[in-house]
Image 1 (cartoon, helix red, strand yellow):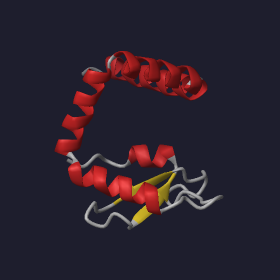
Image 2 (tube, rainbow, N blue to C red):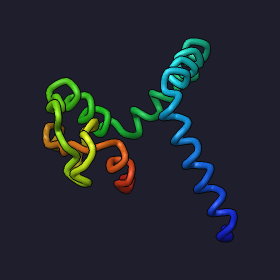
Image 3 (cartoon, rainbow, N blue to C red):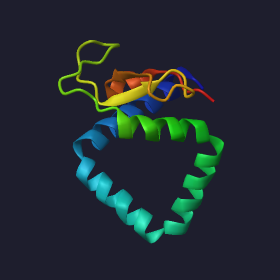
Length: 112
């Protein structure tokens, strides 16, 4: 990809991020409506995702149920923003999580 096209792609991604943050309620309503109208397709996607990442799903589920993010918890990466998400380094240890802000959590490379 040439540099100009890459720059345009990055600008478009940034625009979509900002739009999503400003229009959360509209986006959530649109998503809920789509799920309601496409329940079978949604369930199929979820099952495929679950089968491919069972360990990840189980670790997330256990962490959400058993670990509350402390009020006022600061992100351990940037040490600026409030932590809103849990991060697993190892899905075999579902209760061993780090607390991160959404921006820092999104910058961590995806695992397969």
